[in-house]
Image (tube, rainbow, N blue to C red; front, side, top):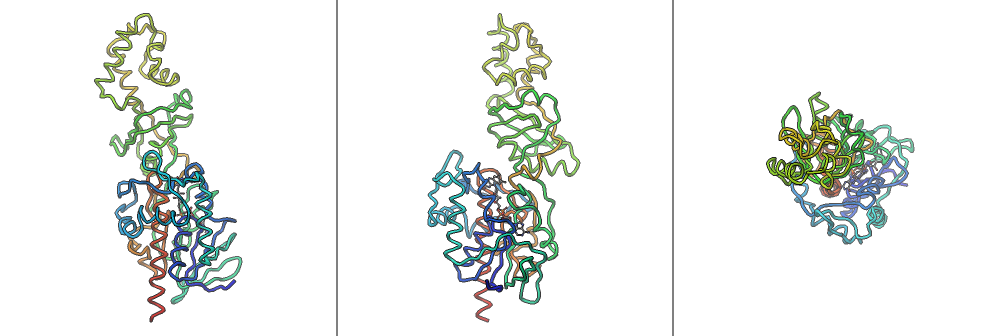
Length: 418
Ligand SMILES: Cc1cc2nc3c(=O)[nH]c(=O)nc-3n(C[C@H](O)[C@H](O)[C@H](O)COP(=O)(O)OP(=O)(O)OC[C@H]3O[C@@H](n4cnc5c(N)ncnc54)[C@H](O)[C@@H]3O)c2cc1C
């Protein structure tokens, strides 16, 4: 294999493959260095193996980071329409599911990886697997990659090594050393889209419950974020999409040593007064001949009923009609503001994304080129941008990968003309 390429990309994940394809389509010779034994391992795990590869709803509101507006010039060049078109041309027929989530019609993430690899092959994008990079150096206009398999050289370098989430898929944070060597700053990395660990002992009793509701995240008594959907309670804490969506903020709060808690609302469609009226009706009007536990049947899952009564200090055996207004007020509060103190997250290994990364102040958003080192580019999760659950992280990977690959090939043409 030749050892000199126009561009060498580190990481054969979503953004690296996209960057390689676009650079090669524009005439660049491309090598991707991957330290795993296969490409796109994380893509295979996405969307429970079905790959939620983008979302109908797009906008800055779905992205986080020190400067979420950084995504705008990137998406202007390669957004939702371009992504659907790109995959359609490769053979991925998109299926729009509930909530605007797009999946391949095959229902298989493997088909997404397969078409990307087929396109790489067609374009002669070389992928070297099991490569251990010791060092990346830049001397004048050339990058050299010192690996266990020898030295590779290129005019341009794209770092697409991902974050630290789910390290078994390859993104183990080892890319950070190259980034820091080039003098780049990283914002603090925390797990995102991850389960949160709670303190309350009642969690053991309600483990396994799934219920529709809303979740509000508070940091130092200030409401920071909110989401609605299926709440999943586990013996260690809270899971489900609403918990995932707010988890990055919880992780940052905990990192700063702040008090973090969530309130769960199992009757989000009712006001406080309406919820209280509902309990009065069930207990005081329809509750004759029933105890408190029986008056709750049919409203929430069985195990949750017990915890809510407990938290309201109402005995399950107490005749429902004998409950006081005060007790029913406490029950309303428990059902609409069940507090769980957050003491941690399940960590990077269980996270779907990483919040934090290369500081966007040091990257040119129109090209994804480093503002510190010319010829060095970034793509994907390695950058301080993280999306919400729903296809937004892959969309960022496709878009930033495209922009980096495209910009590299434009610079290459300019250099060749000189
Ligand atoms: C379980 C799970 C489910 C997910 N589901 C979804 C979903 O449905 N929709 C969605 O939008 N997002 C989802 N995500 C997030 C999404 O997969 C990532 O945001 C996306 O893959 C990031 O792309 P990337 O190219 O930046 O990084 P990655 O896809 O992580 O690729 C990085 C690549 O770089 C390689 N690498 C790392 N370090 C080195 C090194 N030092 N040398 C050589 N190679 C290196 C890695 O092995 C890897 O192949 C999910 C994530 C997980 C873990």
